[in-house]
Image (cartoon, rainbow, N blue to C red; front, side, top):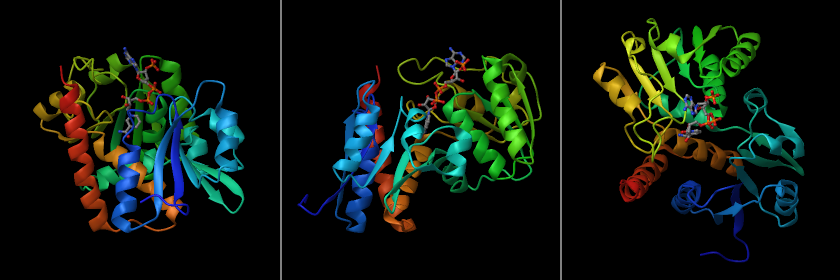
Length: 292
Ligand code: NAP
């Protein structure tokens, strides 16, 4: 029950009504008996500074930030953690004393979703399709967890090159950038991440690759999309014999990491597993409702 002492956390962005974050955070809080509630705040364009000041004035204890403010919020903060600075996006605001520090938990969420499936990246050759915000988080994660070579392939080549420059200058990993047309006919990749928005509901027929030669040497394929559960890309990867992973657990674990940063404690595995199962049911229910 919400009382006068209940701590309030929230999400700012636009739109936010479809977000699963309230479901995840409130179920974690309930499972752990923590007196908090998590709500969404749609913030109109031009109102980000006011929203941030409002958060502080109203004593909101922590905030997630989503599209379109993950980059712009950084200018307001007292500090930004190292990975978030590299990625160029913050999705979690954490009070450290009176100061507010920005973190990015997408890359950790993605890593935990791989780790749970026994997927490692040490010494592996990675291909990332796409060069948007989630590709940056993926590249930082792959570099941090020991990939030996990272190729970024994108429709707009300059954006792929910007990511490989950043990663190559920061981590000891070999990098290359190319077009998607070149990547799809190249062999040698072992783990492939699909980070473009192609294939996402309602345009589920979309797929960034038309030729599937790049899948021949891969044993793991990850699509950051979670609606539909199996995109055209993941279906092609499954047919090519890859282990396939969609974006559902990434979404769950980026929220878990934000929760942990706010509460200063690791969520126990049994609680994690129970809340993840409930979350998957909720997503499946919503996805079924959105199927044509
Ligand atoms: P973004 O920054 O807008 O980047 C979009 C990417 O898709 C860019 O590389 C863009 O290429 C490419 N793209 C878009 N339309 C294309 C087309 N018609 N042909 C070829 N490439 C196209 O988006 P984002 O934030 O990285 O998100 C991308 C996807 O990841 C979304 O589906 C999102 O739902 C998902 N995601 C999932 C999670 C999770 O927790 N599971 C977290 C974050 C994102 P150009 O650069 O050439 O425009």
